[in-house]
Length: 180
Image 1 (cartoon, rainbow, N blue to C red):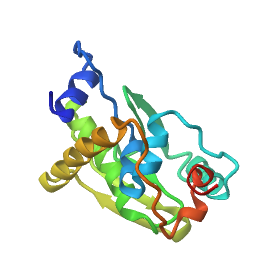
Image 2 (cartoon, rainbow, N blue to C red):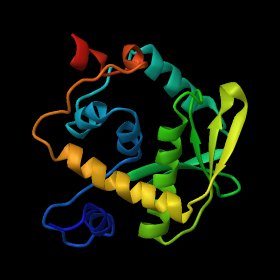
Image 3 (cartoon, helix red, strand yellow):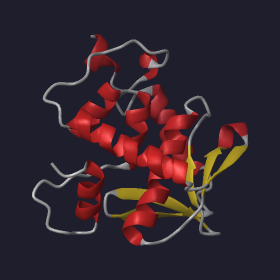
Image 4 (tube, rainbow, N blue to C red):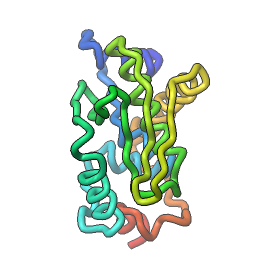
């Protein structure tokens, strides 16, 4: 079987692929938060849009830097560019920094490997007045590609991974799929 990274690149570049494979930024984030959440997302199970955490995140994303960024849809990703050309990812808090950094790193990887454009990124937490620069280093490339392989493994399964209690389960938009 072809390496999932190669399949994703071929799919993204529009090459004929027997079994196309797609990864969105949200999938990359979910992979680093909860594998079960990723599996649900891969099956197009709609999240609870009324969930307070989702509402807060949407509000912050919709209002922060709204006059300084432009949304772009490129194949399987959707990202925001600041006026200076950096890719920005806005999150309501820095509690789950690694998943947000990996989502932004995936966008930078995708731009580099699929589009052929090198960009730098910034992870912003407006409510905390924090901004962190993110660059696509070789270490990040390796982590993104390992995550792509891990995502493929999870979404290829017939059943979701078992539910495991995490500190943030109560605020998860898929909570009822696991615990009710």
